[in-house]
Length: 220
Image 1 (spheres, rainbow, N blue to C red):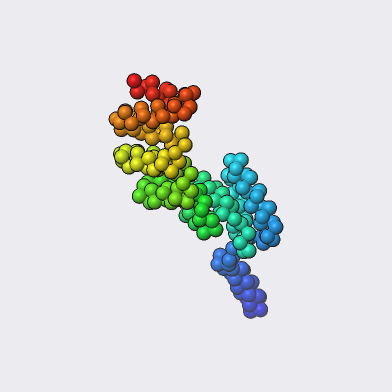
Image 2: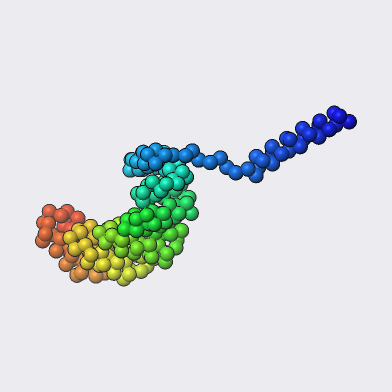
């Protein structure tokens, strides 16, 4: 009888330990001091800039999980969003971009990051909203005009694509990349005269511009 009680007690202990392992909370991330968080943020950003997204992600996840004092800045969360996006962890990437916007709403990159996610999910309506927010945050952010115009053209919305590039050129009158893209879209849309005017205007300012030269020659 005594042995039976001992056996039952052992079983209870083992079962309790097993249940604790199943239902217990996850181990807390290591606490970082503000200085450590700053140092790791810089390390993660440097890795992301070097294209080492997997390594950057590991470092930046540590910062995000232990950032109780709010040391990490918007750029850190943008980089974290990019690393999560690279792994197709879209909900986590969106959360990181949202935090970046909260910390610094004037940065265009997190808006663009959200737009790219919706683009990948074939949600052009939502992507368009966020591309527009990107250039509203920073009118000089050329990538947003270019990418939205491309997506609109692929959706057979060439007039809308041309309108986007026209807005970009209006906001950035000296940007040759936007001018070339606009001329190309005019050409694809059959508006050869409009394309020609743009190429000629580019060459008037920069006669050595090979892209404009070649495109203009192809129109003739």
